[in-house]
Image (cartoon, rainbow over all chains, first blue to last red; front, side):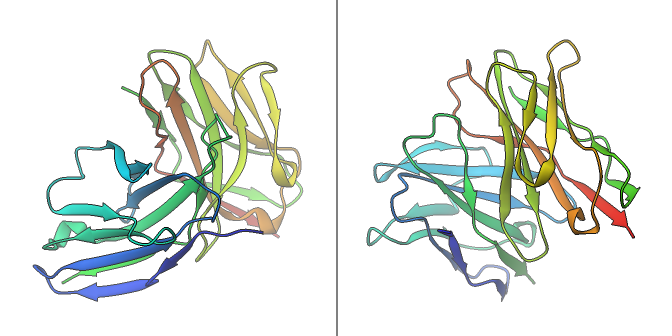
Length: 115
Length: 115
């Protein structure tokens, strides 16, 4: 069964450092998403991406965040200068263009710990 | 705005007994409703969805959910729980009429099924 893969599974970084989280969505999917979950809290939407541009973003997705699809297969989330409160599990998801009901396929997540 | 509430952090049930995981939602328009499950070290997996039609929706692994518009609820149910059902369950909603196409998740409910 096709999977969304994410790397790294766990990253520890110092406050102020840049972090790039990587995702390989399912190959024929057209819509890509990043969500995050701070420990014990709800899964929060960050950003959606379609046709090589951001289609929607939440208030969390400020200027410190950016996304890119550099090579047609990877989908990355960059945090320019990490803060302690960025510590969370980050989930990538994708869906095809045929499912009008938003059935997303998620990756296993990347746990980010900011010290 | 769209939102989801999962009032229980944890649900405990004995194997073979019926289980219910509660979810209520808030949207201004018509909802798409979803349940996802997360096993340890795995991504969120789609279980079932409600779009329109029959209020009782059947999904994977014997789970079902009942859409109740008057109570704005979408509780997840299973007639006979298995130990292997132990996992973290997320309810999600999309407001069809909002122009906002992304899913909003609840904080999750941990289901523990004891032998």
